[in-house]
Image (tube, rainbow, N blue to C red):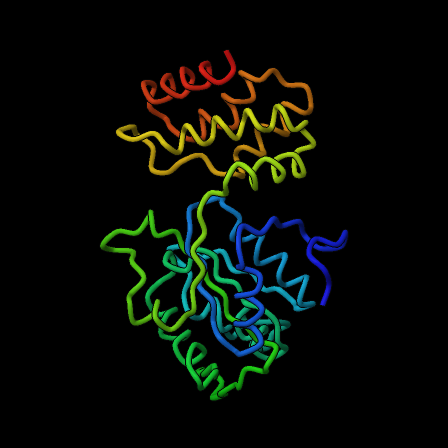
Length: 264
């Protein structure tokens, strides 16, 4: 096992014991669900852990049209012949590694039916089209993520699915964690990174505004990167924070006013 954040690992700054939970889940064949807001580090965490455990990573960005066939595979025409082509989930089960379903709640409902046999003691993937039933090797791990804040009646992870996973809750990091992350990822100096993080904290604490969610660490890094490269602070904030967060003129102006309080 490699130490945390050696040069060849994707950088990730732990906020708690999430790395230990991930390792324990992998060692015991348990599926893992990551819950938290957009841009708080869930995907980077999975990338870091896959590299740390020396496991192949198959990432699937889930969306409205993602079906079970997209995960499992399908017959395709190649050179005049019909051949079976494995999907990312099947490849991960055959060869071992991590299959990461990002924002799994966005996928079509037939996807969860496919996942159920992989998330209990069977650890099996049934491929109806080929008649195969694959046993997942010890190195296989199913990881999924979703944002509880975006759930609605039509897109909600059922308790029967959620309770098949062990879970880790993610939140926006504390300033003590977030400032070094912004510095590391953007190259901005600590003092100016700290100001950005203070702004991020103020935005996340807002209520009663047209904001579905607070500013992500990702957006703070984008703003920091632009500032580090010489862009004026107000322009960087406009492009990387204010415009991405809202289309409403009143909300955008409120965010500018808040930035003025931090930056003077």
